[in-house]
Length: 230
Image (cartoon, rainbow, N blue to C red):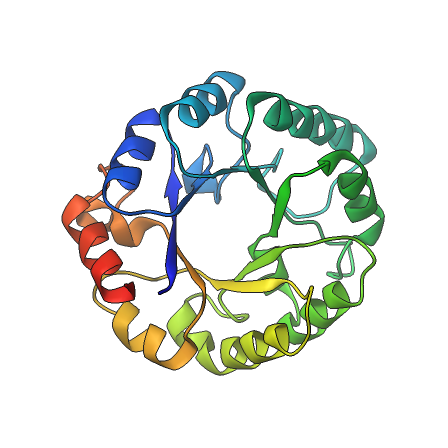
């Protein structure tokens, strides 16, 4: 049985997603900018309102995946808040100006993380997905999971790469798990799952009414997806 991670923006979203079968939540703000770090109050309310794990986006701005020292200080404080409030982990990604993994910043994150679960987000799709994935596997810094669409805008277009990544991730222990995400919904998850057989899938606008984050979570769609993946 595969599991569902759902993007949520607030406490109401979180409660609906949990009730409809989501196994884990990704909490973000400013979803129209690709998702930024939510406020202290939002993190606190969401974590305390559900029993399933909550992953919190750590992203101070939306104009690149490259971060300066002053921005790292903000991220560092945000990670400490996430730990303080009892969230399960963080969603994070950073690239150098050459579009490679920023291992210097990843080292700093690893020092702060403690027992937090870490997902490296779709920053990895901004460059050569296979090469960046393999470089993460060789890194001494712990990454538990990678959210990716296989280097394409949508998962459906990146199936071949995702198949290769999932195979690579299962060949040895302690490699990051691959979580496909982007463009997934009740209308295509069965066909995608038949090909990929991933352990986790990431859902955003595909589980919203009218496919829009301006609307509430579509409980019917999420329940249908849960049934398909069970």
